[in-house]
Image (cartoon, rainbow over all chains, first blue to last red):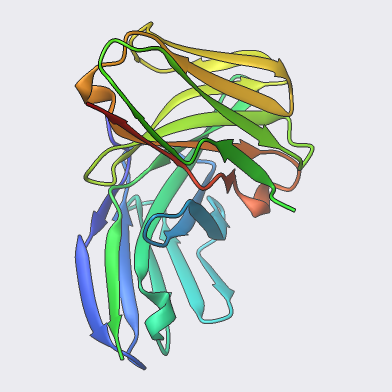
Length: 113
Length: 113
């Protein structure tokens, strides 16, 4: 079954505005990651937050993690048209000797110029 | 240099055929994965190999058979293709610094007609 659920499914904003996407998950995790997927392309890793961390920043990205609520949010500040893409959260658990990433359903972000 | 490369990028084939998708990574990662992305962009893990050993084998039809000749390669062979196999298949690798997440290939769009 799907581990993560993302909210909203689609988000449309004006350039320069901030975009916030949320992710909820169901089971215990080792870390949570966010990925971006441009249309017709593969996924690109954006940022990782460990289960013992609450907030992390990387450039215009800010990620929060609340393990008590099993939720995370991704904030993109000062959005640009080039940020238009699908954004996925992925939770990492360990299965034997391999890490396993389970993806959410994704948020389609459209940034209008 | 492409870190994770998949071939072919597009594959159109008739029902009942057998086809293979190849994946190679030059990152020195120990673990490789196959994911399937359906038309709603839902990503589901299919297989995971760690140092040529099958670690994760989700519930996929046994028409799908992964093969890892060495830790840099993970190929996917599909027998007796069905219409429902149409999707985008992504290869990914992981290893080294956990903070780097997974590296994905650009995907293979499989269309079964």
